[in-house]
Length: 347
Image 1 (cartoon, rainbow, N blue to C red):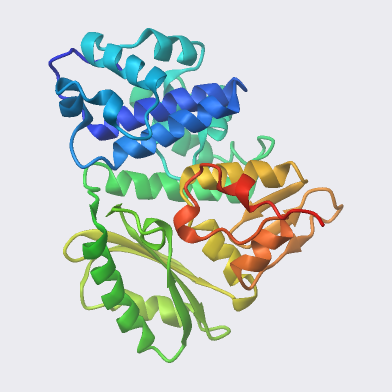
Image 2 (cartoon, rainbow, N blue to C red):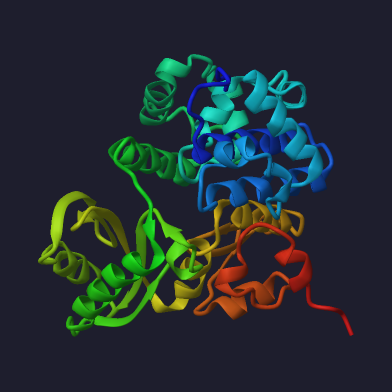
């Protein structure tokens, strides 16, 4: 990412730049604290109340809480020259397409790096088409640590990303909450619905919300009934896609809503999987892998057992406890030091 000094640089672009530097540190297995520092700085920039370049012009870059002096100095150089030597040095050797691929939901730094290397995704202009073509041809599933489910997840993520590109705007929390409350009230009128929860950034109570995610427990065998009921929502703008247990659509005034229906026995797993931000989920996944487990919206799989036993969880407390952690509140799941703080102390 390079800019002329007088060119408009948005908070979103700067946040992506900082996340790219964090990703480079992670991929190269550099100091973990640097990864955390850059990820935290990216979160801060993304949620600033004004454009960071304007703060820089006012000479107040180092006054921003959450951005350290070293990162502030590099950003100052970036704003002055269009690039920063430190950023360039850290990212050196990693294809730019790796950082571009990270913009697609569910694709983290290490996963993006493996995909780019294994599939030869080096052309930024055709990156998403090339990845989708590889996925459709079944070339992702055989890659170690991926599999059929990851391949399907990537296909869905690409489809959703392309639908929202250029049209996806964040709205204030209160506005999103009002829309979500109306949807929840509508869903509660369906006798097949047993429980409803909001997920994602809305459940974390972010200042701004990109889309609305909702989880539902339905009566056994009536998942599709709930999906069809939601498709008939009076404020539906257009349907994006639907399946047996999931539906995605745009609702008025203009925000995407994803509804997922899950069995009660694994409902806690889904709440956990779709609540934390990307950084929290990546770190929790790495924490679990260190114990021989993999995580999904369906539960925790024991990678050490011959049959890859899947443990299911009806609530999040049992999910976190299984990993040796106390329950982490939704608002804390932001990828900082919450996992370390949640470790259950041995007696």
